[in-house]
Each structure stands twice: as C-alpha cells, then as structure tokens.
Amino acid sequence: MKIIPINKAQYGMILALDVRDTTGKVILEKGTEMDEKIIYILKKAGIFNIPVKSTKVINNIAKESKKHSVISKENLDLNYKKVKEVFKNVEQTGHIDIDTVIDIASSIKNDIENNYSEKLFVPLKKLKDFDEYLYSHSLNVMIISSLLAVENGIIDDMLLNVSISALLHDIGKTQVPKEIMNAPRPLNEEEMNTMRNHVLFGKNLALQNNIKEIAIVSGIYEHHERVDGRGYLEGKTHDEISDFGKIIAIADVYDALTSVRSYKGPWTPYKTISFILTNVEKQFDGTFAQGLINAFGIYPAGTRVQLSNGKFGTVVASNRSNKIRPLIKIDHGDIVDLSEEKSLRIVKVLDYIYIE
Ligand SMILES: [Fe+2]
Ligand SMILES: [Fe+2]
Image (cartoon, rainbow, N blue to C red):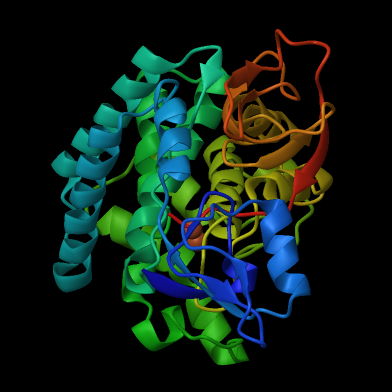
C-alpha cells in the first residue's frame, strides 16, 4: 500500500483502506477501483491523500499492448542493463565499448524488423529514479529514432548507424558534473553552457573512441539544433542539419517530455505529440515528425480517452494506416479496434498519465 496525493490518482488504482470524509463517514470502501468519476468525487469531498495498492487493470492493459509490441519486454530489460553498463564504463574510464553498443543496436533493429506491423505498440523504459534517467533515456531515444528511420525508408547498415548515434546522443553528459545534470532548479548561465556543451563532449568522446562514421558523429553533435536556427551549439538551420540530427532531435524531445524529471512531471504522450506537430518546421523537420505520428499515432498507447458512446478506455496500440483510430481497451470491457468500428470515435482525451 502507498499513500498518494489525489492528483496522482489514476484509473485502475485500488483503494487499500476505506476513505472517510472529515466527519468520519465512509465515502468509498476499501477495494474500490479508481476511475475518472471516483477521482472527481474524492476531489470534491476535499480529500488530499488516498491509500492505494497497485492494480490488475493496468496489468491487463500492459498485457493487451504486449501483443503488438515492437520490442519484447525481455529484450527491453536486457538491453537496458547493457546500456547501463556501457554508460557506467564511459563515466569511469571514457572508454566506449563499441562491440556492446553494436550488439544493443542490432538487437533492437532485429526486433523492429521482425515485429513491425500495422498494429503497433512502442514500449519505452520509464523509471522514477532520476540518477538512472540518462540510461533509460538513451535506450528510449534509440528505439524511437530507429522507428523514425524505418518510417523514412532507412534500412540495413544505415539503420544500425541511426541506432548507434541515438544510443550515444547524450554520451557527452557523462562529462557534465552530476550537480548540474540533476539540479532541481533552473541552471545559471555558466552551468547552462556546460550542459549545452554535452553535444561537443559527446562528439569528442566518439572520435577518441574511433567512432568516425560522419553520420553517427553528426547525430550526436546536432541533436539540439533546430530547423529554425534557434538550437545549439551552432544554430544550424534546415539543410545544414544532418538527417540523423533531425531524427534524434524529435526522438529526444518525445522521450524527455513524456518522462518524469527532477524539475517537472511527465507530459502525456498525446500532449507531447501535439507539441511536436505544432512545432514542425519551427523546431522539427516535418518529414521525420510524420514518422513519429505513423509509429505512435495521434493518441499513443496509454492515452485515456472517452468514446462517442460515453465509455472510457485506454489506448493499447496504434493503427499505422489510421492514426486517429487506435485500438482501445474499454474499462471493464473488450478491446475495440476503431479502424474497424467506424460508428465509434474518440470524443475526449483525458490529461492523464500512468505511473507503473
Ligand atoms: Fe542532449
Ligand atoms: Fe537526450
């Protein structure tokens, strides 16, 4: 059991104890499952904290998503461990174990090639531990970048190179002091410059470790450039930025915004997709951003929605050829594939995030 603030309450959580109002009257009994209506009732009753235990409902959703997962859970976990080893090694010695990097990239590439289908779920590693953010973020950016590459016809060795570049995109952060990296406050100008220099540190680390492929190094060096010239380090624009730089920029922002950081809560994937679409041709390249929509849909998995029949549900997978009609697990009901059930549509998106 854990006590959580009511604004962290989520669909599917189960009450671990009776919840009482200020007069001691039981408002909701132990064992009640949270949904949007119940959360609303509790907020209205002025309840600040609730005792919950974790949930079978979320497990059910995870099971449904798993059927369409582009990367197996086992591979995700195994590769996470390997990424962590590679990064810890770089932190301590400055040496990049390129064989393991290639091994991780090949494994993700194989899964993508074998499992890429019309109905798609993209699993990402999301952790609550800030210290390990760099490792999970690097793995996630590699997965997302690989999908954007595939969506844009990049295959074989070039796909492997995108994966390697994305995995190493923030490797320069291993040379930024931890106090700056994890500061739970805005950075001052000097600290900000050090932080921004991670792209240069990363490029140098790659070159020192004999990673000389220009495309890989450009992806590392240019992933904070923006097509309107407002990025860093050089303020490059459109054609001056390499394809790898443009791809990794999108994947990087998608993962960063949907993650918990020391200074912010996570955005919903839906809000994040909308943000990226709004900033196409300002910050992000339009063609590659389209790849993000193709892979995740407009309503990525995990999005809580209300349908035109009044029912609530959770998106479990996207339909690649019908981006506004994903697969939805209805609360306490079946899976509905909106690409087949044309009479139903999404009428509302709830600003809602899973904490697993
Ligand atoms: Fe970065
Ligand atoms: Fe990053």
